[in-house]
Image (cartoon, rainbow, N blue to C red; front, side, top):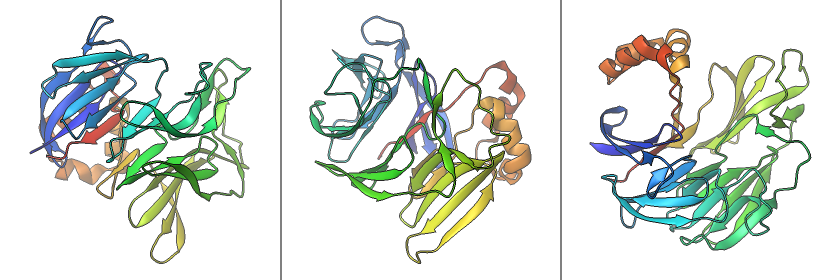
Length: 301
């Protein structure tokens, strides 16, 4: 059985034991609160391979836990984190979206060492006049791929590669329509007549394919580029993926939407589900609360 960490709420990390998707609940890591070792607003976490510990990033602090949930140490941060991934080298890739008046950390993309000293950074975050900005599309825009990472820019026009000690543009994207990625969060989104707009754009890679998901009007599409043949194919789809693990796309569905996915998209999955008791319980109680899985981290043992 391989354990997997699941970031499922803003207050805690859940640890499961699993083989592929079958598994049982093991433990909850992190306790809600504002005291030492407690989490008030969990933004992301990383698994630290060298000592098998977990680092949880709260708004302005990070807490290290053992896999049993014991608090090991805590450190204050002078910047907030939107998301972070840990590379095999031990370096960290930070994504940030809102400026804080800190010229060292106010970048959309920043590479640091394990002690969070900046190695390289790109795409400085400008001061904004409007009070609230939303990203319409991929939330976690950095993806770990083998010994490097990829980053899909906040404007959707460039893919960056992140190596051990540098960040550089890998290739650029051009569209035959306008793109709607950055928007005013206070304004409602109306795409019913947006004939010339692509929205909710996200990008993922496996070893063999590059996948660009997007919405046009009310329909989802996926542009798939085959690395071997160089061919590109566009598919209409009923979903978009949220991450990639072992060259497989992962779809994270919140509980309120699960019945739709089962009935309209993945009906055969009910027959082959490896944990039918858990599925039945979720389907019977999905209206009691919305549980959204935000991130998966498969542990290497």
